[in-house]
Image 1 (cartoon, one colour):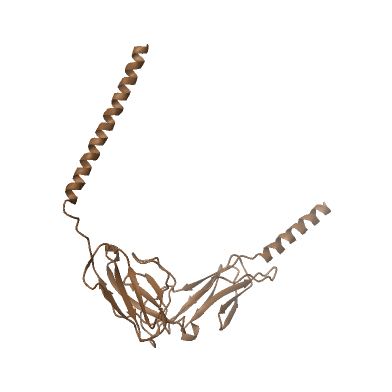
Image 2 (cartoon, one colour; image 1 turned 45 degrees about the horizontal axis):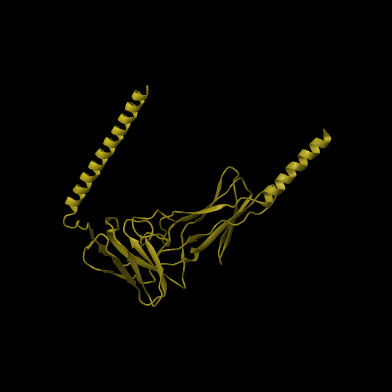
Length: 285
């Protein structure tokens, strides 16, 4: 039995070494996820695959935070009681396993971008298509030290379905990434890096009734990627159904009649085929 025991012990040791060398990565989440202003409370929650001894939170180019974790919990929380501009940035977390003292890989990054004081503006990330509201995503936030951008819509009047419309956004010359927002959506519907000066054009091709609504712009200066301007003034996009061309109703009715006639003819042919098969079998008998 001794050789068997030694083999089992060696096997478990090898499993522990392999597991320690391939520790699962943690995941990092931001709470709340829909907007944080200067002075608000915010929590970064590092979710862990199993009980660990120590957890680190890294701010890219900034502070490192660490804490021991209760083995009964599946996450470690790092809270900022009163968020300031210095807290804005990119964060990752990492943990150490107590048995092996091995260190995991860092989590995927999470961005915390801070708004101005008491704005109440919602936060945004970008990279989603235009149209109906995109799904809710982690927030980014506005800083009132940057003036809000302006917006215009072409064509201005009410448009019919299928029309192409363009939103023109501009600021006071800041080179920036512009974002187009739709009221009622928790994320921007389009984003664009300004190719000249401080302006960007957003085109929605073939608008549908779902595209109707109130739109605004914001921007992120290139030199301050974790800060955003507040939302600017709004424009209203009204979309009306395009009337059917003359005679379309009559044409639709004619197509329906033709389809019915074809169905009846097919049923008749099938019935005749069945009749002849049965008749032929009766004659053969």
